[in-house]
Image (cartoon, rainbow, N blue to C red; front, side, top):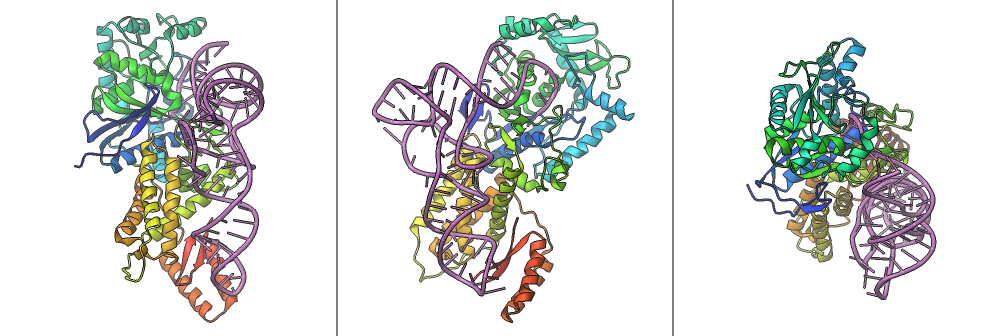
Length: 499
RNA sequence: GGUCCUGUGGCCGAGUGGCUAGGCAGAGGUCUGCAAAACCUUUUACAGCGGUUCGAAUCCGCUCGGGACCUCCA
């Protein structure tokens, strides 16, 4: 195991600046990401967050870290509606459809997995579920009560925020909130008599008689609070304190704030050293969310059936589209932007296909082109520089296009491989393939069978030699119908992905 | 209302004090049976006003616009 040498900087929500990433125990890295609540289909906004951390996982691995990537499935505990008197989301769906809660969980977990596969998101090292960690959660509640940081009320247990701060805690430090402000804001909403303070959040909720999902506990038959599962699962698999905790911007408060308070209280240590938050995907400037009804399902995207979509877009097009922006910026979803992304992605995909076929040819009569050598070296170095700078995939992709130029030139015989020298040639080829597939997760989307295409291409060549241009055009149409174009180069004929 | 983010060329989108981001679209060229692809060249910019500075898209202030969180949310 070589020690990673890339100086990676990550924007840390805790410090509000880009911090040099130094793992607790290099080369090992612990990464925890809040996964989906499986009560409905995941939409494209959700995908953006998982894509962000997929990229982080890939890059950390690429530069030599051994990453344990934990991404949970929330299958209980989320409340519906206002405050803590709401119903469990999964339970509510189950009642609506008259099926078992775990059937709901299974259905949407399956859907989630098919979506991650669609977008080429790598599987996490561990994918724990909240229901599978009931014992740990109950134990955590007990510890908090013992420490005087939680209290029972009517069979439910709440985290005592005022007490936490009196004991030296700093509720609000992650999300940048001031406790006094929070208290002022919530004063009016009071009406939740079970709590000592409206800010207190549920660790354990007593289940109402009609509530389907319930577990026995010392306090009541009930279910755990939403924030507790992540605390229990992250620390169980990554330790009391681990390297990186990620999630969507909208989880910063209260979810992650509560996790900090819980972890600090239970273990006496801040749970994560780096907190990362990815920004929202927007539609016409507004956050994409289920509740606003402006969300796209991945399936709608691929088929182009959503009323806001003018055409289908492939998963890799979307992946490329998202990677072209920085993860901390909002990204607006529009047809025009998607169409542009589609063309950009196709060019890169062609480059990938080509790069894999390139071979080095020695030639004594070809002069070495030092300028091009330097440009290639610089593009590769700049790619790392971009990713090291808080995962700037947008700038990274710009470097990919710089490399692409040389790959295309080599392929079209506009540049001899000998002009680069074997070392640079190999670096160019290997880097491009690794950056594309390994780091950015961008792969080719094959549309036809190679054997058939090769056959058609042979025909094309024959017709061309015989100057039967009407037939030639027919073959071209055949390719075009499959989203492919024929490339006529001086030294050879091949096909390429087209829009 | 409180806290915070944001406003870049036709479109998307990087960029935090001086150096061409990039993609898409547009224009011209090389190549070609014609195209396409590829490569080369190229047009359009930093919301407005004021300030700091030798110098600002980049820092500060104000104005206007957009958004997020404060309640479930990736």
